[in-house]
Amino acid sequence: KQEVTQIPAALSVPEGENLVLNCSFTDSAIYNLQWFRQDPGKGLTSLLLIQSSQREQTSGRLNASLDKSSGRSTLYIAASQPGDSATYLCAVGDTTSGTYKYIFGTGTRLKVLA
Amino acid sequence: NAGVTQTPKFRVLKTGQSMTLLCAQDMNHEYMYWYRQDPGMGLRLIHYSVGEGTTAKGEVPDGYNVSRLKKQNFLLGLESAAPSQTSVYFCASSYQGKTEAFFGQGTRLTVV
Image (cartoon, rainbow over all chains, first blue to last red; front, side, top):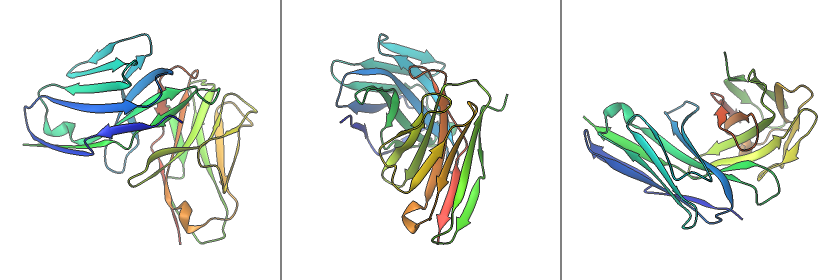
C-alpha cells in the first residue's frame, strides 16, 4: 500500500530564507507527483506537477524535484515571503490498485515571519 | 471558466439525516474524485469515477454513495449521517488519470 510522508509537519522561518519541504513515498511505481498549496479554510491550489519521466519542474520561486528510485520529492521555495505562509501538500499519482488516483501526505504547515 | 464547483459550502446535519453534495466541473474531465480531509490525517479518497456512468470505492467508502450520471457532475450522498462524518469534503477532477488534478473549494460538513 502506497504511503506518503511529509517532513517536517510544521516549519517557521524568517522572511527571505530559502527553504526545502520534503515528501517521501513508499512505492516508486508512481505516474506523477503534484504539489499543492492550501490556505486556511480554502481549497487546494496546484503548484507544480512532475510526471514520472521528469526530474524537476519550476514555476517562479518554486522548484520541485522528483527521485523515483529513492521515493523522494522536494519543494524548494526561494526567498520566502509572508504570503507563502500556508500548508503545502504533496500527492503521488498511484496505480498500484489498477487505476489512477492521488494519495496525499499530511502536509507541511509553513509560516514565514515578516 | 469556473473549474470545479462544490455545492453547498457549509452544512450542519443532525445524526441520521441524509444529504447530497454536488460537484460540477466544466473542463470536460473524465476523472472525478471525492476526498475528505480531517485534522492530522490528510486527504483520504472516498470514491472516484473514471468516466460517465462509472464509480469505484476509494480508501474510506463506508457510509457514502456516489453517482456520475452526467460527465460534468459527481454526486456524493450520505444516507444516514453520523458524527464521524464531520469533515471537510473536497471534490477534484482531472482530464485523464495522469494529468493535473483540480480541486473545488470544499464543503464543511458538521454532523451533530
